[in-house]
Every structure is written in C-alpha cells, then in structure tokens.
Image: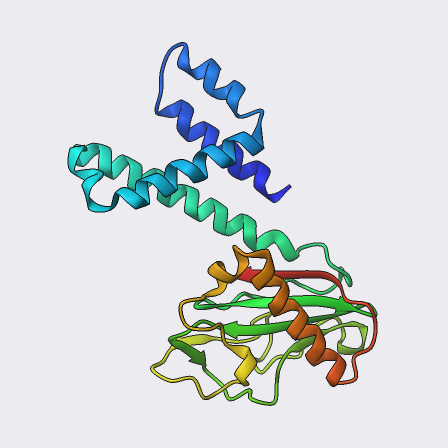
Length: 217
C-alpha cells in the first residue's frame, strides 16, 4: 500500500512531462505497477551506468527539471518507507523517530514494541548506549518509549563521527552498507531483524516476533 502513492507520483511526473495523446498511454501504463517499477528501475540503472556522458547532451533546463523530479520522487519514497512500521501492536504506542544517518529495526513480541536504533558508518550515537540495545513501548511503560531523551519519541541521534564507540558492535551498519543498502536486499534486511530478535531472546524477551520492519532515516 505504501508504494501506491509513489507509483501515482511517478505517473504524474511522466504525464506532466508529456503532452497530447501520449498522456492516455502513460496513464494506462500506470495500471501495471509491477511493469512500471521494472521499467523505472531499468531506466535509472541505465542512466547511472552512463555516468557523466549522459547529461552532456541535455540543456541546463532539462537537467534541472530532472533533478527536481528526482528530488520530489526521493522525498515521496522516503516518506512512504517511513510509514512501513505504522499500525504495529500495541497501536497505542506512538511511532518512534528514525535517526538521520541510521535506521530503526522494530518488532512486536507479546504485545510489546521493541525498536533498535542503528547508525550508519561515519556516524555514532550522541549518548553512550553500549548496554542499551533497544527501547521498549508497552502497557508497562504507559505506552511511552523508554528513551534516553526526555519526552517525545526520539530514541537515538546518529551524529557524524570518525569512530564509533558509543554503541554496541551490532548497533552499526557495516561500511559501504548503510540502511537503504541493507533494506534493498531482503537477505541483508532479514539478517538485521534476526540478529535483533536473537538479542531480545538473550535479554529474556520470549515470544514470536511480529510486525518486524526496518526503516531508514
């Protein structure tokens, strides 16, 4: 469901950049979301592979228009991926803020919501949290996040840093594998979630994990 608005945006961008009879064809193409995604991914991959040679044939206005469209699309994609943890039990818990320069891995176990902040390479936690692998929100916490920050839903801040010393070893994405790179691979994402659930079990949190997700800041 989160991708529906994204595909609508992509179709709108395509329609706005065309005219006349082409509009009807473009709108019909948007009815096939799978084909649209494959075509868009292939086109973007091809453009990236062309490197610096591709924009040389474009006018400054064409380049600026494309950059603007890509920026709008990126913003929309980012907002949609942030919504992927919404609706998880317990629903009385507010959505935790996702740290810029990192991400959040979240699961629900026995009607308690647990989220683990992670920082990307080149970022570190603003507060020491080596023994604090995750934060909890449940009936026992008054449906508030038990966080180092007073009030609100901020669990962690990932600040630019040359070394990473404030968190546990597993609280960082590997070098050259930031949150989005991890999320783009189902295998890598599953590895992060499985590692988190293993850590929860080691802390005595027993039960079947549900509503697992990874969101990136």
